[in-house]
Length: 285
Image (cartoon, rainbow, N blue to C red):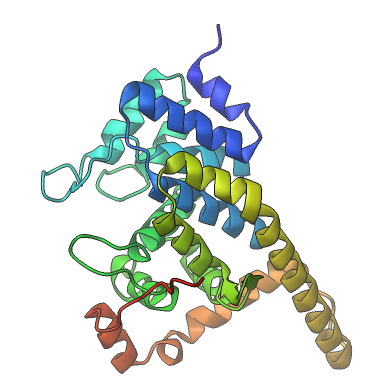
């Protein structure tokens, strides 16, 4: 009889993989809510859009399960620093490999796990970002633009997350890519709206999978073709060698790294870190 780890890792259909994690949560009581679905969706888009060289299936499975021992109001009841390690230990009992459990444990930095796995840095930056763009009891949600400032200037400021700069460029790109509805809506804003609107995890998964996955893919593909065409034309004019898409993404990330001060003015960063700007989801999205 196959163990649970084999069962979920061998499931390649993303929607079915999310449902498997959901039903595990119903059976065992592990943490799995709409925010986990949103994190997994953003991680999927990031990996594919930035052409990151990782096992996408493994990372998405880890994204669905790395918070399995998280509890509501973790900070208030003393579990913030322990849930990732407890989750990794629990996943080991389900048959997951030592490396998979290590990746999940490194979703945050409260343990001494080292050296960090590259997949863990994807979990970390997506987990942090998604938490910022959702409403919390103690604060309103940040806009995606505000959230990347907080990531850069506070949450991940003193970390060596290898994907932080690339992720910031990815979010900036996604803010310009829209889904056609009654009005054109940026992808992340639409996903957050669906998260807030849908009644439960199952309807959220169904809505994304049945209605919006194809729309998002179409919008991303159109944008990537447009970018590739523009870059190709620019390179022809400059008579420089054509770079791969990944090289271009790395160049963007490096440029962002060198221009951090111009990207976020001291005044803008101060306002965002003090959360003086509030994110409001329009009802007609």
